[in-house]
Every structure is written in C-alpha cells, then in structure tokens.
Image (cartoon, rainbow, N blue to C red):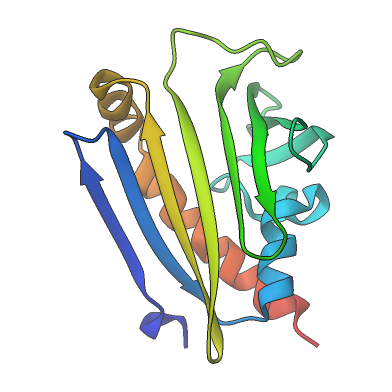
Length: 167
C-alpha cells in the first residue's frame, strides 16, 4: 500500500535548500498530530535503533521543541527547534539545529529553517517540506550526515504509526 505514496527529494545547492514531498495515507488531523505532538513524534522521529525523547514541547509561535536522539546505549544528541509560525492543520515553520540539553544551539553543526505544509489530497495527506540552510556548507554537511537516509526511515516509521492509529 505505501509503495504508491509519493516521496520526492530535491536538493538545490544554489538556493541552499532541500525540498521533500511525502504522502501519507491517513486523516489530515492524524498526520498533523503526528508532526506536532511530542507523544506521537517520539514514536517515529529518529531512525531506529535511535529514538526521540522530548524534554520540552511548546507548540506555539515563540515556543520550541527540545529533544534528544537517544542511542540504544543511552547516548543523547540534543536538538532544539524554535517555532516561528503555525497555521493549524495547514503549516508550521521552525528554525533550529543541534544543541545542548538546555537548548543552546551548537554553531559547529548545521542549522536550518524548516517549513512543513500539509495538503489534503483525497485519501491521503501530502506533507511538503522546505529546509533552508544558512550556508551551502551547512547543506552539504547535513547531506553527508545521512539526512536523506534518516528521513526515509523516519517516514516509514510514521507510515507504520499512522496505520496503527487509524480507527
């Protein structure tokens, strides 16, 4: 069933962007909640065997998401995203990157602005994602760190979660 769901990935080095479009066969509200609720995010964000562990989720403009990617051995890598704008069930924009456990961003790692747009299409929801980096070097570093591979696994995990949450 998920084989016929769109997944498009485009890198534009001149614009310093990554654009992804991924379809999910689920209700719009369910997909929105999976992206914006820490209890659901922690179930699919982060490619296994790693997992996400949210410390703070304040989903509102001016709020932030502070979370750790936790290895099977318990090693934690922290990230923080500040929410810039939110249009309920339609889009949200956040900016951030790797941080310490208190949310202080680490300038040695890439930072980006991440905009998600949710579009209802008959029996599925298309999530259109635009990541804009501060520099071409940051973009290249993120790609080399396995961004595409990690997001591919994340999206598969989200497919599984959504199918399990369906009524």
